[in-house]
Amino acid sequence: MYFCVQIFHTKMLDITKIRADFPILSQKVNGKPLVYFDNGATSQKPQIVIDAISKYYQEINANIHRGVHTLSQLATDAYEASRKKIQNHINAEFSHEVLFTSGTTHGINLVASGFASILKPGDEVVVSALEHHSNIVPWQMLCEKTGAILKVIPMNEKGELIMDAYDKLLSDQTKIVTVNHISNALGTINPIKYMIEKAHAVGAAILIDGAQAVPHLKPDVQDLDCDFYVFSGHKICGPTGTGILYGKESWLNKLPPYQGGGEMIKEVTFEKTTYADLPHKFEAGTPNIAGGIVLGTAIDYLNSIGFDNIQQQEKELLQYATEKLLEIEGLKIFGTSEQKTSVISFNIEGIHPYDIGMIVDKMGIAVRTGHHCAQPIMAHFCIPGTVRASFAFYNTKEEIDLMVEAVKKAKTMLS
Amino acid sequence: MKIQEIQAEIVDEFSMFDDWDERFQYVIDLGKSLPLIDEKYKTEENTIKGCQSKVWLHAEENGDKIVFTADSDAIITKGIIAILIRAFSNQKASDILEAEMQFIDEIGLKEHLSPTRANGLVSMIKQIKMYAFAFNSKHN
Image (tube, rainbow over the protein chains, first blue to last red):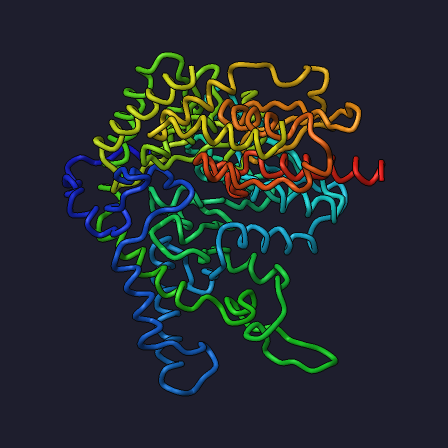
């Protein structure tokens, strides 16, 4: 659905020009030109983002929200302008619903930890079989702490969540549902709009892990009507250690603070502390100021390319790579939903994914191998892991040809 | 043969190869060539879980020496295990404890023993040294 690109509104991307924005892409690795297909793990950074980090430290570095001096004002303004930019990008109703975090994991832990004061023994938390460990473990910890019960939405052989089973799992006991927008291991796009409606119908809150979605699409949190939406900055050309937790105002007011410290208080006495208003209530301590500001730069960069164009390019890469890889005998792709992003998880019969990864690395190809922090998915398919190639808009068909050749060579060496 | 002599022999064998792919092919062939462990020893207790590949390591005493058998589910890892077993198995505990790992560097396979590779090999070497340490403590 997200790849239903309106052809008339897209232009052909000048990939050569775009690649020139990313200095790392012209590197050689093991003497071979780098082919970077590990975008699902982290994206590369354009020069404009790298420069913005230096510029911040060279020109306006100061602590924010508390100094009266000019630099502090400039830094605060830039930080808050970035928050507004992100608010617009995800179409949040208020900028104070946009919290800066250190990444997706931080955002999920913040919400899970807040629900400890809401859940009672016997309440239910619904996760899915497609989740990254970071959207499983915080909820397991929450259940251990509160006596709540963890329920899991199963998936089918294509790597799609089974909606009938989801409907049956929901009940008055369900207090929160937490599911990824797009699976990191398989690339499946989940029907989150439907899932959000269903969760709300039983009075449950719902958190969407958007870490793998935001590189490919612009989420509209008001249209989705989700209660929480979390993502990382480093997967969308931004700096590491940055992220966003969107939460509906009503929910953020209901949840207790996650960490105590400076910045998140209104008044402190030894008898009682009152907390600051949103968003500061959840932003204790000096944040990653440079990171927060530059995340805005990264989002500007992506919007200047345009998500329609990004999707068009990635769709072509996905189709091309799928066709080429399937020509290799014994190669099997895991995650075959019609609704998927530019991620291909695969194995070759009788060969361990680690061995393939080691050999293609020698040929300059960066892919991810292993369980992708999603061991339950690997257990479902009875495999130790997969080789995962994940493409970004700056990748090319020529790079896919190089990867396919490298995989063929690995197969010959290992068979 | 002493550990050092075996290591020198391995370094010598690898010196024939000019390219990475020849070195890899040799390691892969070593991995394929022999069953390294009796199936009954592939127990949970003997498993060293790397993030990426699994390693099984079993130790037995043979007089004043320790015999190691091992295996992995990944063939390159298994090939390197074959090299390690050749160097360290059927050796005295005190010799194993003193042995250096420099030869792995010399045969161009150092990257496989980096902790970030998460293939279980670093833990396997630690475990081999632990067995040797335990053996030494028991008999001294």
